[in-house]
Amino acid sequence: MTGNILTLAASTFLETVRDRIFYLVAVFGFVMLASTAILSPLTVGAQGKIMADVGLASMVIIGLLVVIFVGSSMVRKELDKGTIVTILSKPVGRREYLLGKFLGLNLTLVSMLAVMGLVFLLMMFLAPGSFSLRFLGAIYLTFLELTLINAVVVFFSTSVSPILAAVFTLGVFAVGHLSQSIRDFGQLQDGLFQRQVSELVYYLTPNLEVFNLRGAVVHGTPVSAEHLVMATVYCLAWTVLLLVVAGSIFSRKELRGE
Amino acid sequence: MSTRMKTILRLISLVAAMLVIVVVLRVYDAQEEGVAQQERLYFPSGNFLVESTLGFREAAADYLWFRFIQYYGAFSLGQNDFRYFDLLIDGITKLDPQFEEAYYFASLVCWSSFGDIERSIDMLKRGILANPDKAKLPFQIGFIYYVIEHDYQRAGHWFDVAGRCSDATDKEQRFAAFARYKGGDARVSLALWKNLYQSTDSPQMKELALKMIDKIKNKIEFQKRYPRNFIGPIREI
Image 1 (cartoon, chains in turn purple, green):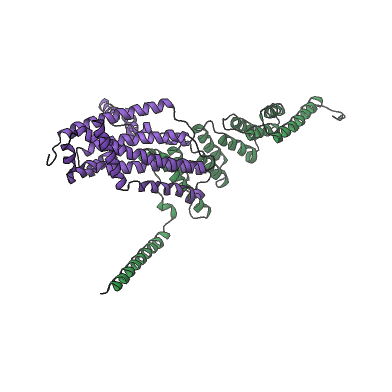
Image 2 (cartoon, rainbow over the protein chains, first blue to last red; image 1 turned 180 degrees about the vertical axis):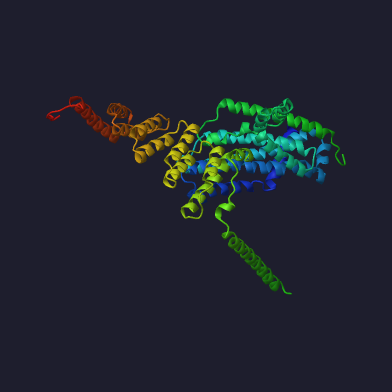
């Protein structure tokens, strides 16, 4: 079983490599260079901060683009090509297939974040007084956030078309960053119903602000080990939940030719 | 039509398309020139920005910071009346409350361009609330009181505050000691110089501290021997 999952993960990873997804890392390098070379005259004493902000935000944006565009069409592509039927005709379960796909895309994410992280740390090292190992905490939290989004896109890709999966995932990303505000807003309402709905929204959507300590890290606040553990557990819980539900939907899905 | 001819035609069409793009942009820019610069700018409130930028608040603050610098540059050239100053600063500092440089620069603009010292200090105090352990902002308040207001007591207080921050250097303590001395608080100044002498690693600073300690001790001694109501010949000390 594990062997099947790992094989599928490896093939998904190789597929993204063949799709030249890693070109996006070059885009990241360019963004980092631009933020230092082109924008530095405009930074007025805040060059290190701006470089760090731009670098960390670019990692999230590039990772999000990869997850959404690759993840949303991952299953559909194989359905259209019919390769999924060949894979599932072998002793590979549907849940294994889905998990393999998820892990493959996550492997792509890890590789991209590792390269982008190295480029980022190198650039920060070259900028006087800007380097700090605290950034590793922020990069790890970015990885957790993107892993959760990966699970969300896998969940949607099993039930709706790629375009809808992409739109819904973007929606979850937006709501995930607003869920605290939605709850706070709900608590200000007079009606009990509104308050309960906002509370429900808060618990039914992933709170992505848990993974957003980029600003604090840039301003020199270290990420505590406790927070890292909490965020990891939170990410794992959501990922397991989404993959289990996605697996249930996918195992009931009617596939052509099977 | 020969292949060569087709290639030439393609090249011509490319150049023509580029020309059209440039001309359209030029016409557009010419039309925009008549409109006041500030009309192009619309800045929503800081609270709205915090919610609408999702997880990219700091990057959005940086973008607004660039706009602010450009806007200030245009204001310096007389191209706008800086009416969006408050909105921009509010946006930047709401998006990234710990953006020290924004408070610092805004304070600088307040007293240098508007001559509004109170607002300038207020801006720095806002920054201190968000960054209570950063020496730069209280030091700047002290500096304003020292250089512009000549209020050495208050300046000394703010230099003291700066000196207690975790990123403080000898500079803050030195300024605090100088300001107290200038403000007539010789005993506090003496204590500060002694403290600086003990804590500094710099030989130059030790030398300066020692010089100031001697000077202040002499002054205190002088004041002791010759109080304000003293009438008579003054002996050499």
